[in-house]
Image 1 (cartoon, rainbow, N blue to C red):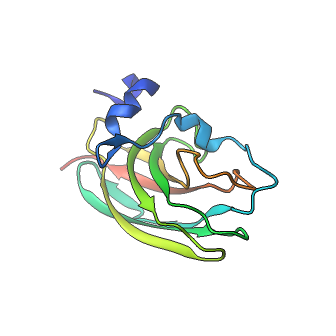
Image 2: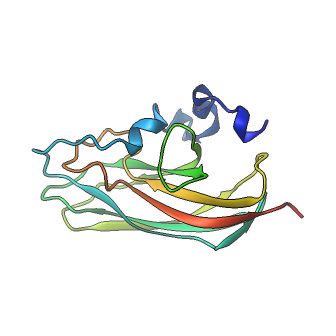
Length: 158
């Protein structure tokens, strides 16, 4: 299967966490919807990974998500997307996810996640986008700060 042939409905079968789908609508995670009255604000502070990644090889991504709000945020899900640009939209491919524990105001959580790009994607420049609260279950004051993109080069398989 090539990346260009993956339809949005296929994302459900690609990204599983503990046997359940992580994201209902990948395009929704990039939309600037927000609840101005919400005291919670999840923010992706950083995303670190190698500048060059070989297709099929494992690598580590370290992301940090903070609750910049005034009240505790419940557990949420962060999703990692492969993209040809730095904006999360329906064309991007969800490749892995992780749980983010409840966060008190001003607290952050960082975790290394092992990832590999094991499907047919041509070598070249890409972005790995981290989306906090990717399922959009946490009402937040600002939704536009839920993503961070990191550019990298995908090398061909050996």
